[in-house]
Length: 361
Image (tube, rainbow, N blue to C red):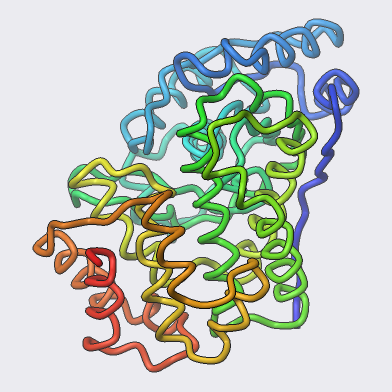
């Protein structure tokens, strides 16, 4: 058994301000990597800037990260960091800015490397710059994982870069979710659910990863009702959703993700379906293939039976009617022995096709 989680995580109100001195210990010149709007609207960018200002740090903001960030965007951010002589990086936002920040921290530390380094890997390289993360959604768990998922336009898909880059510090405050649209909260909470299900039903799961996955599933189940109502979650409920997201991140940091995530990439790239929904539509079929272990997952998450769970996913994530696209998704997973090997059942063409096509039901 093993458990590796080198990130120091603080989950508390005003944690960016509370831990400004710890941020400053990462360096003196920060590149802040974020998206175009949300971090400005929810106050997280202002909080980070104020914390850096109190400690005398110099900073520059790269705010061009798109949803599902591309290799090209990361290289652009890295150029800004190199030009300003950044010695640490802060990712602020959802999974896209956090993943882009990880990759940028690597490329700033390796200015002689080209974009193909993010695809190929395997060469000697300098360690990434120190990294802090400030998540503002409740799904990816990227603040506590070593994974950076980027879009590779040449391959027409998404994928993890071949490096593990853990943040030194994660600063989690549910107040940044208070202004988020419910569609974003639902989509990212579905991503957290996928992380928990896939980690719990992973071939490499052990006592420690199960501890995270099962406690996270129970926590997620206590709040699933928030995803199907019109009223806004309370601040306390938003804190809990963000905490469950981080626990889910800890789970997949040990095991990795499984077949639903592998299937989701084609849907996200080709049909622009939000990542959380693109993963969630495959969860009922994936659980059905997992037998008794799948039934335990349902109970942990608060569902009495598979049909109840299917209906929940239909209501929150919808369905995918394009069977040609679902077939393309299946073929991408079937081409990856490593992804097939993550399943707790015998993942073959028939079972993967059943999972893929179940998204249309």
